[in-house]
Length: 425
Image 1 (tube, helix red, strand yellow):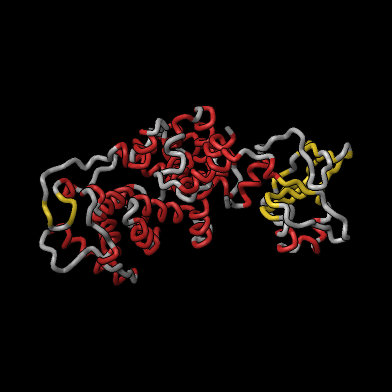
Image 2: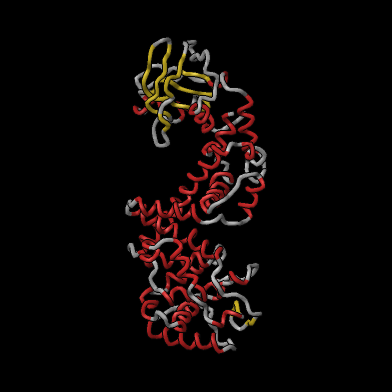
């Protein structure tokens, strides 16, 4: 049965082998006092271990390989970093390993001490084609294991999003208002149009929104014109007014337009059409050009109430796209969409600001907001719910998305608390 070296690391870390009557390959009695500190960087796999061999205590490092010959293959015999190795842990003992000074390193072959059922369970997780590897077992895992792990994953997801913000922070030379504007655009674009929205917001100078604040026509023409969604063949008065205004602004501010083809309308709900979302974004920027300091200083309910107080231009009450009239519909800000803005923009940027400047209170504020907002609802959350993994808050739902995309899909079961629990018992 073949398996990766990481599984041996896992077995050693959690002592998942018969610890009675351990013997080295030379027949000496072995007792593992301290497994050592797991090292994910260069050097021995476990540092600062302690083992007793024939009643002699040894302090040093532990190196682990599937085949003992890998010691030589990896060049450890000539590497001084491995001179303090006190135990070589292998699955196949096919080679006697030596330090660079020629002394022999004690070896233990774990194959004799590990239950085959544990290997079969790992193999089953890795080879099944279920939606997640532990789909048939996850409902049996105790909540004491699952929910602390989800809380950790929610923070890990925020830390991953920090990498996205770090790129924009560097590109904007730490202009946090601009960072927020770009991230806000991405959130308005949802998943399908996120890149196009980000490009649009990166193309417009925020000073123009400040200059034309409270002027709905100029603000809307800036966004729709930059997006490339204003066309000469439009028939209705409102879009033609925006086009005329943009032609003027384009000349005096040297603006450029995106290609219409960059925007996607197919197979999405009308409320998510880029034209309707741009209209909403325009309303936000028309009423308040700079949002970052406001987000940083205010509480969640105040921010939500402020957004809900902004009214869209009346044209959008019976339109989702230009020149396509519909039945009259609500243009109020939905609770779900405002939560979406928090989860995908406001919360990550507050966390990123705290992490960038190492200010704990902002990171804590972001985590608190995530735990206050109700869970998101999507196909992944629904699927986990059917497996008895409940999602109550946005912290839970963000964690489950992170679990599915970053652990389950890549079968990182050995790094997952749920996978660890399954393999340990």
